[in-house]
Length: 246
Image (cartoon, rainbow, N blue to C red):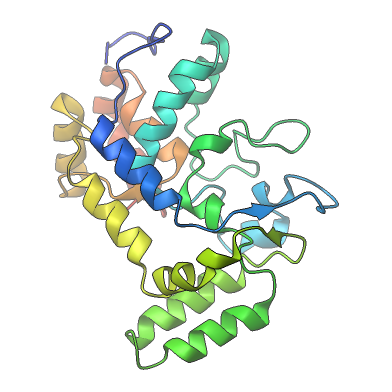
């Protein structure tokens, strides 16, 4: 990355995410049952935070895994004009009230590459379903996994969604309560260099870790897309003030 203000790549740049990893990622995504939001009375409301959610430390498009971040960057670089690329890739707000990819009419501008957290939202449309999965899973997986599943899934129920691929639901819920999706995303992340070069040194010196596992869109951008001179001077403060970086 150049040290000047973000250099926007031309149409058709070399993908940042290796093809083999891209394929694995989308095979994983295909395991998540599809849902329809056609009955939603206010499209996009799940992509905005209410004041109650802000106070409870919720975040939009989180967790975003490193491999997913690169997948979205590749999509932005090939599907948006230069102005929109610059707007999205210089976005560094870690916890915005509104997802930066949400359109004015409540649609998702990166729907084909939306991350796992967006794909799994609303697959279950009743809290009783979440509790039922947790009950069945007791003794099958560690109890802290079940509690984490309950905490997450209870807040991602949407009664307005309609399940479209019911044949995938059983395997999907097993993957959710065992955090199989997440573990696979973490393993994929170990096969890519995010960040690399000087940015990797900045990150490791600051965090004591070789690479970020998951963060938010704005957080990853602060590490990956800011001018290198800025990152050298300010990234330590970004990391220390973050409560979503992992």
